[in-house]
Image 1: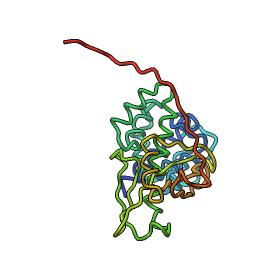
Image 2 (image 1 turned 90 degrees about the horizontal axis):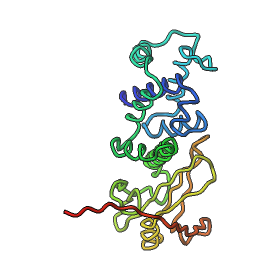
Image 3 (image 1 turned 45 degrees about the vertical axis):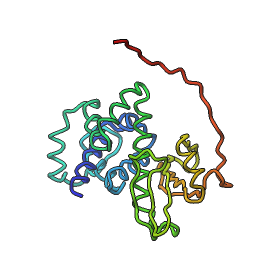
Length: 245
C-alpha cells in the first residue's frame, strides 16, 4: 500500500504544479473526475490524491492556497526536491508510467493517436477505473455475491470478468462513463458472445466519475428494455504493405 500512496503523492504534485494543463493532458474536465478515476486506477482513495495536491499547492503558483498553515511533511519535501525541476512533458511521462497498466503497449497506442493522445489517456484510465470499481464492489450485487472472480480482461474473449458458481458462470463486460448519461459501445465480438450467453451475460456500467461513481447492471443486454443498441457500420480503407522475396 505504501507504494500506491507514493504514486498518489506524485500525481498530487503533478496536478498541483501544472493545474489545468495537467487535467488537459490526461483528458479530464474537472479535478473531481481526475481524483475519482486516478484513485480507482491506483487502488487508493480519491481523497488521498486531492489531499496530496492540496499539500503541494502552497509551493506552486495556482489559485488555491492549499495547506499553507502547516509545514510540509518531510516525505513531500523530498519528493518536491526530486521532481520540482521537471517540465510538463517529462513529468507527464512519469505519471503515465505509474498509472498505465500495460505500459509499453499503452504508450505505443497513445503515440499512434497523435493529437488525440489526451482522449486516449482518458478512455484508458476510465476503463481501468471502471474495472477496479467492479473488483471492489461486485460482491454487493445479490446475483454475484456467491461467486468467485476470474479476470479475463487480457483474454479477448468478449467480456472482462468471469464469475464462477458451482454449476454456472456469468460473463461481465465492464463499461465506464464520466457522467450519469452518455453512450456505450459494444464490439462485434462482445455482441456475438452476449447473444450466445443471453441471461448469463451482463454489462456492468460504472458512471458519474465526474462527481461520485455509481453503477447500473444490465442482464442480457441485447434483450433488455432499457438498452437500445443500434448497429453502426463504417467503411474503412485498409492499407497493407506487400513485399516479394
